[in-house]
Length: 472
RNA sequence: GGCCCUAUCGUCUAACGGUUAGGACAUCGGCUUUUCAAGCCGGUAAUCCGGGUUCGAUUCCCGGUAGGGUCACCA
Image (cartoon, rainbow, N blue to C red; front, side, top):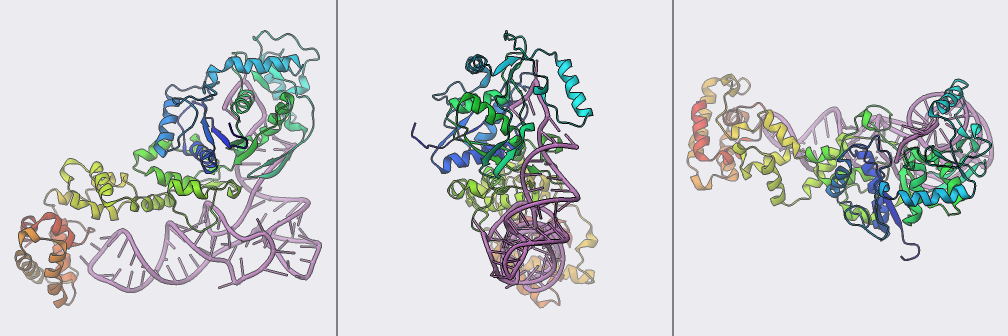
């Protein structure tokens, strides 16, 4: 491997579905790697066997594939640091643990879980932060694997370090503690094994959420014990929920990333939106394709404060990405979301104007906003009347419209021709609505609908005349 | 409670000591118009508070306030 090559990773736990917060972390790590022609590694951190959810790993891979985040090393592609699933790397962690024991920097926890819990409660009562090391045994027993193995903090001191996003950070000795390296079930803790793996895999930039900032002194003390230089830290601000100022988590309604797929969002729009949630390019440009994003992405411009999720902006961005599709692609997508009886490509333009994501089509269909294209609508005859126009006048206008439309060649019944036929008639009236409204309503049966010209052109000459006749 | 982080329009953000504090979403108004949608044009709207430093602070420092994170045999 070349010197100085950027290597980042995304290291999710298969403990549930992957939500958009996780996805943004993955995205930033990936953008950082791609921007620098580096490597992006996917690593599955499945050391919590209690909380592991079957199928979660597959789900994570599916989300990443959907948005186009590819990995150079990891599950299903392999790589020089194989395997990429932590439960298959237990020997490695043990090797590191033994090394620490030899140095006198790791020891078995002699207390029962209940005893430790008591220490914790006492600290809480005294309104102090709980520190296990205050109860550290004077003499270390030999570790036989039945007890948790703890790290002995080599030196209780303050730490100062640099974070790419948050700048210079520091924490006092209270942040340091004898954390658990290996649990009594034999699996390592995150605090331990992520560091081992990051070292082994040559990770240069660790990108993760800012909730880890308070743990970094612990990591630093472990790096010191291991005599390894820590990587570059890149902590990301939280994504906040839409209603409160709470960190966006599963409990506060953070959605499964795949739900956005099901709702008909375009993956590049999700990527674009997520990229802007806590990061901003130098220019005022906001609409980016994924490859443009790789070009302009810059970790230095990541925000410090948390950003609130905003569905309106996501929808707007999604629409902008939809507009980048070709006419054929748009038509194809729309037809996919349309039921059998509405499979008509001519509907595409009027639908496209009215949606910001494909899933909106489903809503339009459910609300009956399109059903008049499939069958003659039932409607309230009173509503044919435009404002205070007399009913006789309406009938007369409808007849005029019928005559004008009847004169158009059936094979040439286009929107333009229809407009050319009706507009001169409408212009002669006091208000165009006296003619256009009853025509539109006769064709659609809806208070709100597309204009009568396009409706008529889609319905065709025969159906149009028949509906006008019925109205009369 | 200890420790840590953050603070510009409702929201996402620009500004890296000197700007009429800019852009985007949302909102409001106008144009267009037969209704809706789309489109175009325009408006309202922000530097949390108090001290310093400075000729000059959104910007630097200190204090307050508010919000967030963390204090697991979870990651």
